[in-house]
Image 1: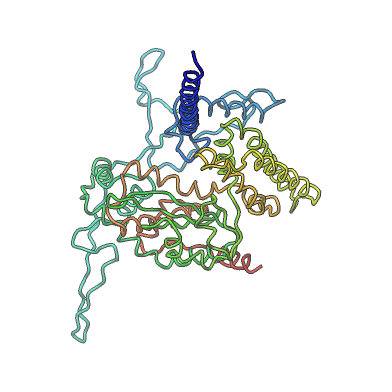
Image 2: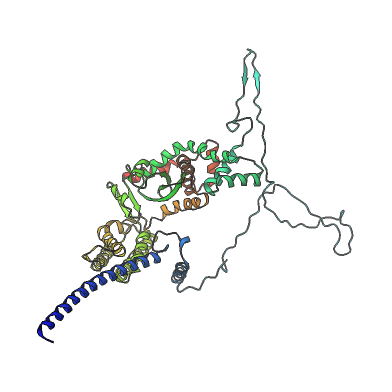
Length: 496
């Protein structure tokens, strides 16, 4: 082979090598994209109620098994060194049983004949008794009461007619206890209108219409204007409060239910928007000057005149999700352990009636926190390209721990601040149950009326009131009000 042929073959081989290098680079880029996509899909598959906002009902068998195993480990840790507790009543524990009440009826039972010889015992003397009491509902029916308004003529010739009581609104109408029971079923037991009407018909014999049931919410929610205004004022003056929001359906469209609450107060409202427009509409946060505990949602940071505390439960959940990726596992696990340990220490200090953690303990906690954040930022460098969803979540969480240290550790510096935002989530939880049962509300006015009554009932319940009694008072025109002591205490706390 001469030199010319060798040069030609060499050039062809060089061109082929160049083509292969380009193809190889494209394949490496494709592999990287596919790896990132696989990581994103795996992260989605691993999402459950333990590491995301998904409800426990959506968990698969694997997630349920993990949750059960964790509960078992937690129970074993909690009872370490103690004898394993068996289910049911414990040996030596005080027993409980139904207590006797004053009887409405007494029924005597006499033996008809002697168990020995068979003689008639009708005239035999009573030598002893044994009593058993049966507690049961009375006959399921309603009572009809005629209210007769008399006209009387005075000696002067004028004729005066008596007034009917407030519940006698028509020639024939359902009374306040039927209305109260209806509202109780709608608001507290989350029954749809048709099923509520069916229960009243079948259990009490009250043949109410579905339309009458549907009108009860708006009829009585209007009597709570003064209560709702007082409730808002109390929340605006609270020392600390919890906020959250969740989706609902109104007239078939997605809307948002917002909550602002404390241990003794609950206010719920519905709005078309999820953001600041809705919160401003409520008219509370613009007057609030306490500490707002929330889940790190960006809208809450727009209220700059207040202090913020971040929910530890949400942070632990986010750390768990990020820690599923082995690259992030070390720092995510360390931070979760630090937060959990700090919360246990705060609980112990509160139980000892101490007002704060020692300066030495706070400094050590702060130093450990900073060290973990430094590790988190080290394993999340700038990749020189657009971050994938998994990388972005890890980086954003690391930055949140870097930038929001004060808000995250606020529960350690101020022991009156809760570690979690669970109070708000508890106040919203039953609304999600109601949404599953009823499917939503027919319009925004009915939805807000329902939430006003629920705010009233839940606030009263937090003060130890019976929910049915609260609703009956509302129906009779004498709604329960937030005690003056609570109102004044909240305002005084905020002032300090």
